[in-house]
Length: 356
Image (cartoon, rainbow, N blue to C red; front, side, top):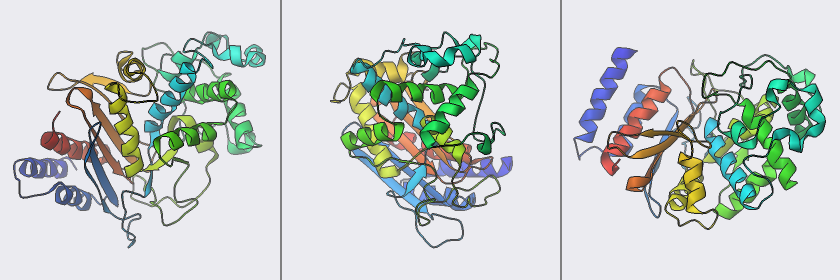
């Protein structure tokens, strides 16, 4: 596998030094070499989409070409969308970053672990908490233990989380759990469900967001593929509902590009939705991980924000570089051992051509 990746990296070097080979050809050659069903990318500035393309198919061994308007699960890239919704509610003074969770849910406090009594909205959204780790593959609680409407299930799941032992304080606590609790705070403060809040943001940005696996309601949409390359059959997974604010959004490459373009506009002070200072807080307000965004300094000493969505059968990667007014996106519908590395290779090729 390592030798295969080295060969692919050599191909990438040939690409970035040859004007004859297009990004489309390079992306498709990567896709075919690594048996990726669909592989797409976008290059964006605050006022221009320089390049956007999708190669491959919605499902392995199918004949339905994937397009930039097909829906892909974006996993943890959902977190930045949730944080933007939270920031808009904070701007409306419906709650604050320092609002304690149990101010909104006082009746839950007595039955919860005392280690969590201090938790605030900011701590829940920025990985600055000691909540137990949880993701889609955890065996407990079992779906049959949490019943009722989707809204009721999210509340039952949150109460279960609050009863679990805390983890040791080792810095950033990379867990979905905080987002599950933060989502309830946003719903309580706004009087709207998370799907309603998501729809409202989509209307403002002219974006159609969805929740869950895209092939559940439409089998012609992209299917996710697991580590063995097997397509994930359409099925309702209640754990996706429990963690919807952390990693359950699906969206097209075209529409997600619009969302990321709004981030660049916001960072430049050109968004009507939030002040530039709030966009800077969301992307860079805390070291390492701010509000839905990891932060770093790149090789050109530019501050960057980034994230990757890896929900088990899709991989989506995004990087935002305000100093050069660029953002880069890669979408795939498979999650094998090397898929993130392949996505990063394509991302590097995009950056090499368009600037970083």
